[in-house]
Amino acid sequence: MSNDKIKLNANQVVAFLQKSPQEFTKADIMRFVEDNGIKMVNFLYPGGDGKLKTLNFVITDRAYLDTILTFGERVDGSSLFSFIEASSSDLYVLPRFATAFVDPFAEIPTLDMLCSFFDKDGHPFESSPEHTLRKAAQAFTQVTGMQFHAMGELEYYVIQEDDGLFPARDQHGYHESAPYVKTGSFRQQCMSYIAQAGGQIKYGHSEVGNFHQDGLIYEQNEIEFLPVPVLQAADQLMVAKWIIRNVAYSQGLDVTFAPKITTGKAGSGLHIHMRMVKDGVNHMLHEGKLSDEARRMIAGLMDLAPSLTAFGNKNPTSYFRLVPHQEAPTNVCWGDRNRSVLVRVPLGWTTDVDMCSIANPAQTPQHRDAAFKQTVEIRNADGSADIYQLLAGVCVAARHGFEMPDALDVAQRTYVDVNIHDKANAGVLDKLATLPDSCVASAACLERQRGIYEQAGVFSHGMIDGIIAELRAYDDTSLRHDIESNPDAVKQLVDRYFHCG
Image (cartoon, rainbow, N blue to C red; front, side, top):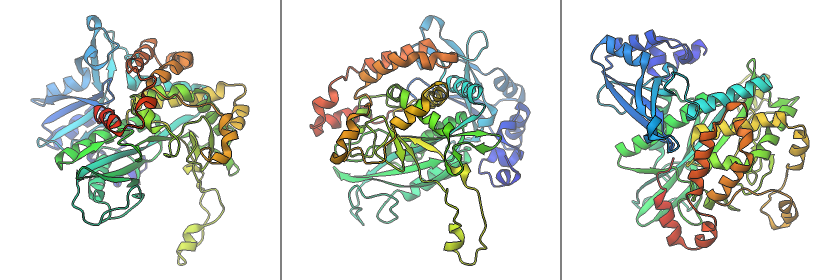
């Protein structure tokens, strides 16, 4: 982290210690606690339901602080993860110092840290979400020689009473400003707290979805992050969801990341952007065009697309979003700047034009290489996702592309440059594989492709078994077909999974 980033960093721990989070030591954390009047420490860690759990410690003396930072604490793994048996359920949680931030909600001065799980022998717990992602990132680097970077687009709805003033046009909230959107200040407060917790935010804005229902207004928002090493990206998304919900609660609002809210309205996705970096250089482009390395990555995503839904689309409402004409993918294909495909190559700054000097005549023209900004985006996942599993799965798929002897051919066959939902392009659609239409179908896809995820020991056998069992338990094989034209039944389903993930 450069000196400029440290000086301007919103995280109070970084600002105080004047060093990068990746350099934090136990002594640093203890000094921050002592010098800043911290009275409590919280351990945060994800459970099997995709939500953060909390363990509180009141700091009574320096020796006790040293103890919890060194040894962590025991937790009941069987209460956190359904695939762990009660007879052998004890796990350790150990804080990761690089994730430290001051809790913005605590009345008592509190320092929060995300944790890693360890087993009875003191080894990283093979089936923990965070360690699975760490293994996926390591395997990617071993095969490609590059680091896998990612970032998410976090979409959510804010629900509040409808005052009737300056009503927004239904389903036209994209980048709208106040007073036609009412939750901009809420989003900005969330962004401020996320930055204080170490989140690297790209921007925030209102999204397409807005509608009125039963005296309430539903407004869709999005907070998008900057690409960072993949484990850091997952940590940021987990903390961001926790912060958004806590800000909503403190303001008497309701928030949902649910993939579907109601019939005919925009659902909320969790689009994941990715890039490959070596020695600080982004390898997504070659001479201004998508590189062969990027195409191999995309081929891996195409090949494993059906089973990736098992990590990113984890309840029945997910499959009510993955339907045509909702800017959500249904077919396994990719394209440039095309929002009807599964994997999109966003518009990049690849032209040799200094737009800044054109917009600002007083600015001296200069050449700036923007290749670092290029990513590709996978668009199927939603707020039901287990974030660590999802990013681990995407990382495995990206690595898989480098192991496929026909990767470039697969990339060529699955490329489309038309709107695949346009009737005129029905012939293109017929040649493409489709995504699963239910949790049960997603489980079957994971069962078929599980060997690839288990290679290099990335996903444990027990974790894959647990995911398959969880998905099959929904028993939703024909659910979308049975109730998609019944708004009342859809609403009951949405209510059941309103606070998923």
